Length: 467
Image 1 (cartoon, rainbow, N blue to C red):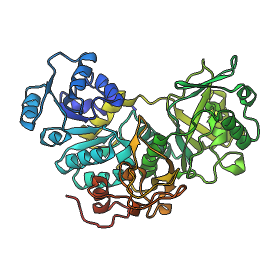
Image 2: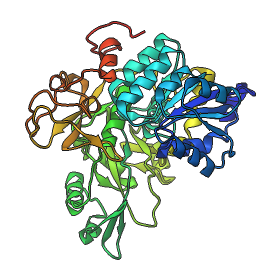
Image 3: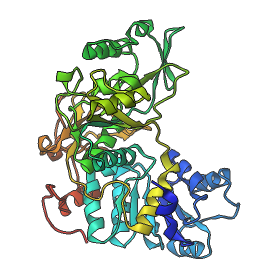
Image 4: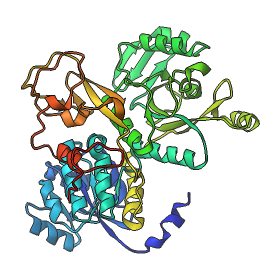
């Protein structure tokens, strides 16, 4: 794809961008790149730490007088009119500003849903970075956008949009997709000399991993042995389930299993793992999404949190030719792995914004349906009145495990991030999946959207438009 040709028609047009959650890690990457894209002008930044946002802009090299702290809509409007960046604490102030698109990156599902719905109701496109909200009401907000001739989209640079793009590329070319997925956030880096495995800031001694470096013919056994050798380290992550929920709703691919497989494996092994069991892999069904943990040596390149598709090979001669060029083809020659070994966070996001505001096209999917539901299984007994607390960098729900179910198996169950930070109306026993009926959803914007917007294939209780 030649992006110069794709966006040549923009000329010197400028579009005003608002960003909610402007102090986060994603936002820093986004703002660092945005100022280099002349057709996009950062107009409004929202964060509770407004002073921190101003300091961040200075760190990124924005001019000293570029930003104005604004406590009301009138001040913010004047700042934008003068060409300055309006920095606000209260996300409600975004509603009164002349924006072309709002990038929602707060990470707070209820707030994110409110900001997105408000923007779409007043004719502003939405780029959704808060996957926690997207996993619950992405299809519903997409439907509101379509009703109003707007774009609601995931963003390039984040794994869901990157994987949606790769899946759409493969389908357009006529490939049969057996599986699609991503690597989890951090690699398992094994030092053969010391027997140490490093996983982000954690380490464990696993000298036995050297003898498991070559997978062998029994794939399932080899993966089980690797997992056991690394039992001291975490091998799954809640946000992966959330991101795969977004991908499922955008592509129609379904979870490979309730608890995703998470094999610890090398990149070269992917085409022998994410294939049907009858061919030696781990899959009980095809057309699925999954996640793996990247295993590598210190000197080897990382998968970079990238994405992949496993496709069925066509002409044997063609794929043997490609194997000879270094592509990842299964040992039996029937499957191949095609992958993008990176995700660059907000550095790529301007592409999504330009596609939305200039051409009216989502860079994710504009045909979302509820194909899967991320749910929460209680890891202990909960009592009525307890708060299902959510916190931490990865927005984990305390004492709960994430599962990803096909939609038809999730009837009556609460989406994970709908239940997060809500109180229980009844006791929940250890091992039970939390049902919607036991969660106090009074005043929940997420629930209001779910109940009022009917999506294709959806199950809204009232087919009454929000608008």
